[in-house]
Length: 324
Ligand SMILES: [Zn+2]
Image 1: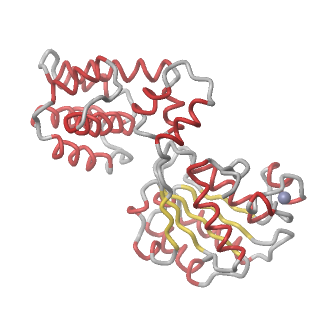
Image 2: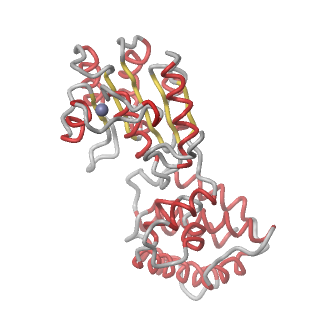
């Protein structure tokens, strides 16, 4: 595009945005879209911009259809009570989108539209629908009401039922290129090097920004020291396991997977910008079968949201490092 920038759409989303708006303008946009992408890349911002654009009464033409921000729809949207919009997500205290939530959604889709050009539904982390909820959604996907957009987002689209996936157009949202991510990070008020943070965050810019808060960096350094202590047998698995049990399983797994990912790259290429603890860790695991370790930890990630005993889970992760 000529300007290289469309309003508030992040640079790594602009191609997706343009294609979707183009399809919409030509009347080729399928009513059900399933977006997938990694956490930490502001995909929520893209979803929100799409929702607002679909609801807006006077989308801005030369900003490729972005919401105007001032019409009745845009104003009501900001108040959080738009009559033509429904967002579904797992309640904060549960990990699951229930069948009752989807029934409520189906009922919403039977109502007539009020003043926006379309009715819009967003299902955030659709992979959290339980089987009954997913089955209940099928009908709405199969027999869409007119002027309706059903947007699903999942950071793990592979966990969705194939029957859901096959009824949606699937759109994979890309990770930003490192140039795009760094350009964005350099515009943020950071206390540490953007390159280092982005490296630690596995290329995910929002995660990199979060890491800039000293607490997380310190927590990660402590985590690395603990892992090193187990690998060098200075500490027992049970000892470190009881420390790890107090932390988020997913965070621990992300750190481990990231480290292995980088260690693999490190052994092949080199010159990765890293902290001393990280380099010590690479050294400690060099020559080991890291691919197997990676696969095993990845498998554990699929279980991380299950209500398992934290201590046992932590010890299982650590024992994988010892046997690799
Ligand atoms: Zn508007």
